[in-house]
Length: 123
Image (cartoon, rainbow, N blue to C red; front, side, top):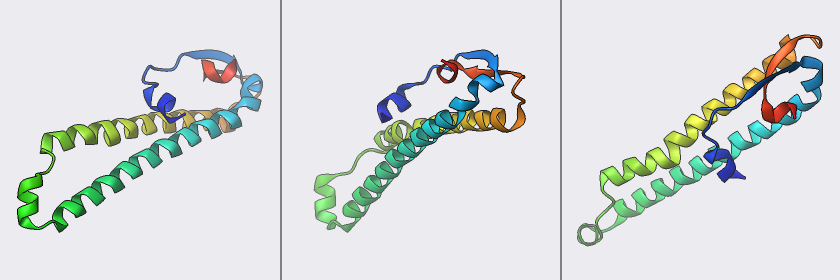
């Protein structure tokens, strides 16, 4: 489930529908997006916890052992950060924008209005 949420980088296709047609699906859509957000945030939190534990373990080593074992180069850490934190959090930001738009449709539109909705919502 999380891999599909993280690999979905292409922009959504939007269609125009009557608000009354999509009202029944909005709550499910919002819940699904919020679940994806929570899963991504859990992945990021697990990575950050793992990195913190690795750093603490490295700092707890004796100086001789630290010299022998070495630590990951900073550029490796930067690439890991981008892959495990920055890009997923950008996706969370996009998902939150979609949720806010869906909530706006739910609260601000009248049943007879035409609204733009993602294709996966109205089908």
